[in-house]
Structures are given as C-alpha cells and as structure tokens.
Image (cartoon, rainbow, N blue to C red; front, side):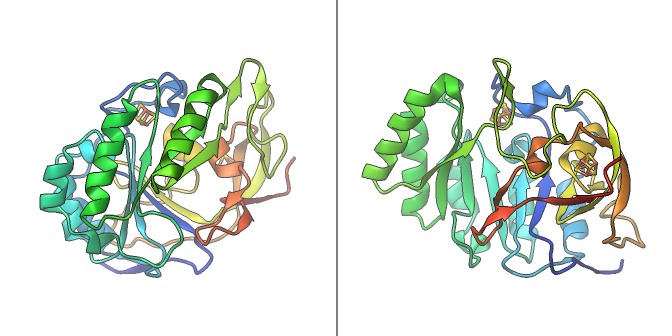
Length: 282
Ligand code: SF4
Ligand code: SF4
C-alpha cells in the first residue's frame, strides 16, 4: 500500500479508536449528538498497518482519542506498534500499574509545549483524589501527563479548587472553555459566527487542517462529518489512499461541530487557530 504525506499546514491527527466509553458524563458529546457508539472497529493490526502509511512531521503526533481509547482491546499493541510519536486523550480509568508495565514514556516523546497524555477531568463521574494519585504515579515513571477540564458553569467552584490544588502540587492543569448551549446561552468563541447552533443550514466551501479517523478507519474532514458519518474522504486501508487538500462544498454550515469552529491555540500554543477555513457561505 502507498504512503500518504500530510499537507504541511495540517495541525492535528485525531484517531478515534472507539466512540464508546466506560463513563457516562451527562454533557458528553457522544450522548448529545446521538452517536452510534457501536460502529465497526478496526483491530490493532489494522490500525498499525493503516497508520504506518501516514507520513507526518514528528511534532504532529497521532492523538489517540475517543470516546475512551483505552477500552480498545488492542490498545497496548497499538501504542507499541506505531513508529510515530503518540498522544493519548483519556479519562484515566485504567490501571496505572499495568500501563507503566506495558508502555514506555519514549513513545510519547515529541517537541510540543503541552503534555502528551491529556487526562479529561469530569467532576460528575470521577473521584479527584484517585485521579491525582494515578497522575502522580505515571509522572513518577517518566510519563508526560496533565489534567484538562471543561470550564462548565455547573462545576465552576470545584474546578477552581482542583486547579488551585494542582498548581500548588506542580501538576499540569488546564481549563478549556465550554463549547455548547447551556441554560439558553451559547458558550465558546467561534471563528465563523453562525456556523454552530443555527436553525438554518447554508452551503459553503470548507478546507480542513485536521486528519480525523473514525473507529473503522474512515477519514473525515471535520467532527460534524465524523460523528454523523457524512462524506468520508477514504479509509486508511484503501489501497490507493490520497489526501485531497482542497476546498470542498458542504451543505451543513450552521450545524458545524463547535470543535471545528472554535478559536483556539494551534499545537505550538499560538492563539487564533481554527481547524477549518470556510469561504463562499450562501
Ligand atoms: S469521559 Fe469523555 S467520552 Fe467518556 S462519557 Fe465522559 S465526556 Fe464522554
Ligand atoms: S462547513 Fe462545517 S460541517 Fe461543513 S465541512 Fe466545514 S466544518 Fe464540517
């Protein structure tokens, strides 16, 4: 199978090993967009074969995510089978001892200014003290790890306390803005004003800076398309796979996923980036 080189402006590679999870947070996007969590999954060997075809810069890691990526039955084979730096987005509900035994910190080595293992902290489904103990254990074994939490109005005070605790104890903790409608108010800063939460759909041309791959290996240009299984651009196991880096027509402007439209940092932590570029909105 041919190798595929990613365009140099690509800023993120998201590998959705599964959309299932071992927790159930009330605001989880998996529930709110009514996902079919049981879609077909690639096995570990298929992921390794497919991902080894992707040629990307070493400071553009494969970000394994979900759902919860560590519930994939082949997670350790995948982590150890790739020849490219990996990031892991996880809820950390696994045995830290087993992880330490099976995974070398070297696989997470890349030159970027934030932790490679990014733990989502969700106060409503997690026990903070247990999470901190695991973070400290993994860190003491050389893993680059930090906590990330959504700045949800419902948990504001608790998040502030957790942040202050982590700062005092030298644990990386970052809050991310809520990107949703909550209590009638839209939260988040968006690059294109009426792209999300709109009642009317428009047509536009859209170009992505992200490679997003669903549990079956299908490639999508944005989170909206991936979650809704719309317009796959190919599959990482296609024998003649190529990346078509052009503006393409989309008829779902107005229903974009906030993750694609929000104004955020790029992977070098420079603010002002958005995952997609949109033009000719009609
Ligand atoms: S841990 Fe993440 S993926 Fe799992 S239910 Fe909570 S928000 Fe959803
Ligand atoms: S306009 Fe929105 S829904 Fe359409 S491809 Fe771009 S980000 Fe996705």
